Length: 205
Image (tube, rainbow, N blue to C red; front, side):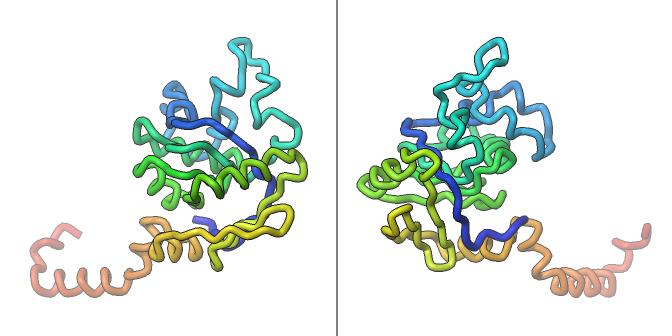
């Protein structure tokens, strides 16, 4: 998993509450188990008309936000079914950080496991960031995970809290597999002891 240390990019404002995972990536796109290619279907039913043309006033279709890497969203983002395809689609589109007042628990945890930083802020702080994000091409935010600070386009700073273990995993690019590989020597030692103490379990090797 790619490390997340600092991110500076355009922030797209999505001033909607209860954006659920079916809105993020509709159910008809869940057949794949590949993480790539889902970005083109992100927010599909909001981004595109039935004939496949773009919905012009949807935020990610506007020229200023087509390459947004940060999403500033309303309360309870990622609610609904527990589909891991939701963070896959966000990341494949290029969204590496989502800022909101609250997240659904499963979506929140899935973000960390897929290299996305979800940041919880207060309502007042979100209002400030939403105003910043409304600036279009000038809606640039800097997110510093090491120092746990969001810096706005005018230089204002917002501190945020995050679980230290989750922070460690993102800073070092560690998903569940990466965490397991950190103790690979202990796993090897355990297997060696098992082979020595219970050789019949390995007779077929």
